[in-house]
Length: 478
Image (cartoon, one colour):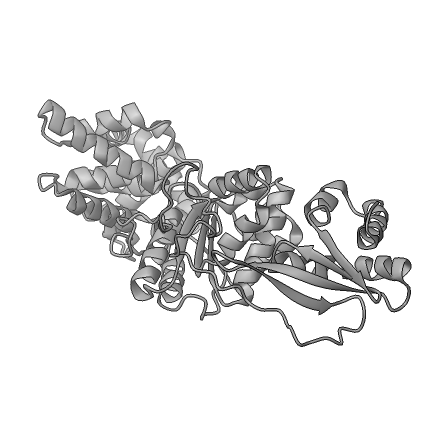
């Protein structure tokens, strides 16, 4: 025969099950165990303090109505919370809730969590493969992705400055969360690692963790399968600086989003730092809950733009310096920087391939070899001709500096070089006339149209000029 406290709780569960979703019922009510019933006070055992807080936040009204229905107006619940103190289970009683919360002798407490403890009762580390020796969690940061190796330019200055401020004082600035976004290959992962490395160096006592969103999702799925979801949540709530890369991959994963929402809230409320990266700004993300998106906007959203030619050259030279290569001439570096304009990672990959080809085949690193590598490994290079590249080819042909194209002058040779740069930009790119004019001396679209007509007329009347145009066109395509 069932004891009275079990019968009462079973009747409560029958009511609750008809009201909440099946998954919520399985997650938040099935693990509860009724312990005793004394003087209209039902004591139930919950598996963790977080579990208690969740019930209080989301189901207090339902619990209150249900328990009063079963026990009358004076009915109350007392929680017995299992506090795992790394080796001994000590029930923590808390009288709460369904009444007026008169008992405040045992307020909620924070669990003393320590990543560096190694006893068998520790919260499971989702980064440890089952069966292997348990070790202290690693930050998962890549040492080479440091601020020293991150080249600053106009395209990334805001994000880098904010990131460094966060790294110096994690959780103490207004940039929490720091949301970094950009297209693929522009350095957001590098910057995220750099923030983590600097934060760890500046604050060695803090726990810093970098995790890819797909890895987070897989860990969560595993925790649900193993029935230790709460331990998974507790683990992430211990982190002082949490870096989550490619947060857009949470799209459509409602249960994982719900879990991340509560991890986010806990960390933010406790002045822990969050750094998130994405391929889009929060306002453009699809498939994410509105409550998450609103929190992503709490701090600072900073984008990484496409680096200009000067920044691309600096990036390549830094990579060459780090690789210890000394025999790459500036014209080869410039050729790479002018040829690959929209993806830093791709540009660095071509450089590594160029070095490898030179070393393995004992070839000199030349523009011809660079062109061969680009044609072989970079897709659609013929469609990626940039205005920067066109200006470089035109200016090299006339033996002048690229800077001259942007100057306000009526010197015939400079005006003609600028007009040719505009003409070829219109011919070989899909950019608007306004954009071409902006990059060719800050001119308007009417000036670009006039330049194109002038070049076309000269080609029809001046054979020497036509030969010059054809030669430049050939160099652009070579």
